[in-house]
Length: 204
Image (cartoon, rainbow, N blue to C red; front, side, top):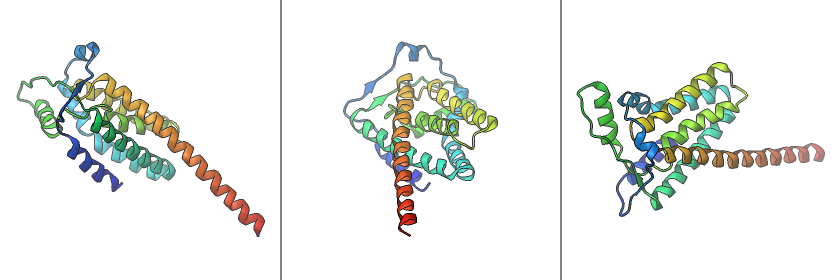
């Protein structure tokens, strides 16, 4: 998990305005209300991802490694996209003097409104949800908790106006594509190990 601080450092280096910035805002995004209360699930995102991966490590170490590899590849893919296709999301003017408004203000100040497509919040939240669905360690409780929390974080990206719908959809497609490749490579590696074991067995 030491790769996470490195990826975070790389993101902050890229989180600045470039020469040309695109907008993917749709009429549905414009109709989506700003709800400051969603700043809470949005802000605990990275701690939630850490907890999920540690839970996977405890319950199914193979799932943990699959998650770390998938996250890393997805994040690097996002950075490549950001380098050539930078997008932005318009933010509302903040009014009020309450903890939730302060939290939104902190989020806005810490994370500039650039490099939104695909959403890192969304791909990582969808990733842990997708992983638990296919895990032998799944049960009603962990599926419900992870699906519910991941969905809440994904929705929060829209309601605090950090992302738009196309950012969310791109994040889901990204995870599905990368996860398919990771599983394929795992299968090839597993078959290769089996062949090696068979050679040693028959050779002996």
